[in-house]
Image 1 (cartoon, one colour):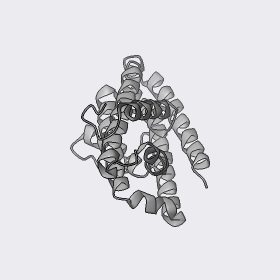
Image 2: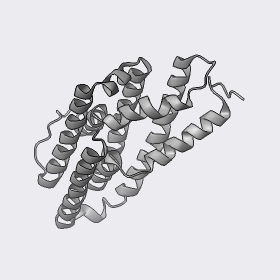
Image 3: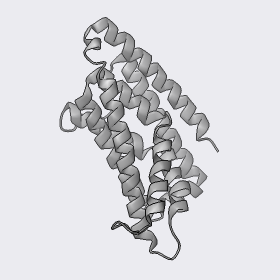
Length: 209
């Protein structure tokens, strides 16, 4: 059964479930979205979700062209992206702790800034590259054109990830009214920022070769 997709229903469902399981595992996106939504509200969180979705889609398109496999096979490129992503996450944690000046320019206002952050964070995410190079190809069916399948699987991944991320923003955003008090807001922001720093360090360890 095709359902309009260039792959079978069984492959479609198994890939969607695999993607869901991966996205429900705590990671940089989940933690950072909680920081943004709890501190700056749901609109800022959803703007970040949109940036993350675009970042995942761009990496998927690059992977479909075979460029991601080159980056994965090159130790220098892989380490460069890996450490750029780690340092950017640590910067976001530091900024959340100190509420300092943002390294990303305010493109299109406050929500544009959050969108740009989500985009940059995922463009520098080597785990996304590994997913597209090591996980996604295992669901490509032999005997069918590879490119349409890769595009369809990428679209499914971005859709599932976006739904999970939007749910995280919705749940974390419920804390915003409670955090209207500056003292509570400061404590929560620093706690979440410390958690983000911890995730960045875990990210450094878990992605090391």
